[in-house]
Amino acid sequence: MVKRLKGLAGAMSGNQLAATVCESAQQIWLAGLGAYSTAQAQGSKVFDALVKQGEAIQPALQKAAESGFRAAAAKAAGTRDRLERVFEDSAARSLKRFGVPTRKDVDALSKRVLALSALIDRMAQEVSRKRVASKPAAARRR
Image 1 (cartoon, helix red, strand yellow):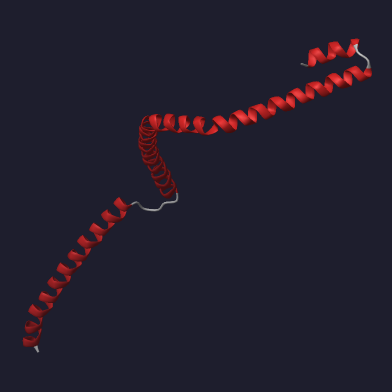
Image 2 (cartoon, rainbow, N blue to C red):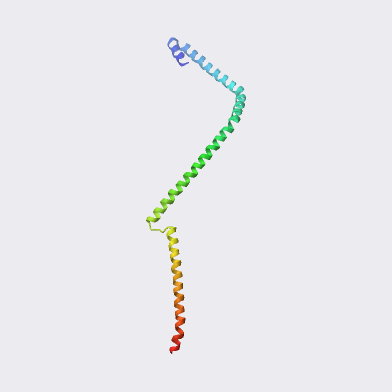
C-alpha cells in the first residue's frame, strides 16, 4: 500500500494525491469495520470452539503440571536436605574453631562426672565406716 502511494505521489498532482490518500484511508476504515463485524458475529463460535479445545487438553496439561510439581517438590526436598547438612557441618566447624564442646564431648564429660561422683561417695562411706570403727577404740583408751 505504501509503495503504491509513493508511486502515485510522483505522478499525481496535490489534489489527486489527497483524493487517493482519502480513498485508501476510507478502505482501511471499512476493512477495520468488517473485521470488527466478523469478530463480533463469529466471536461466540470461536469462543465455544476454544472452550472445547481447552476442555480436551486440560487433563493432559494438568497431569503434566502435577508431575512437574511432584518432581520439583522432590528436588526441593533433596536440595533442602543437602543445604541442612552443609549448614550443620559449617556450624560444627565454627563451634569447634571457637572451642565449644560438641554433644559427644559433653556426654563423655557427664559420664566422667558421674563416675567420679560415685567414687567420691564410696570413699566417703569408707571414711565414715573407719571413723565409726575407730571411735569405740579411742573411747576405751580414755
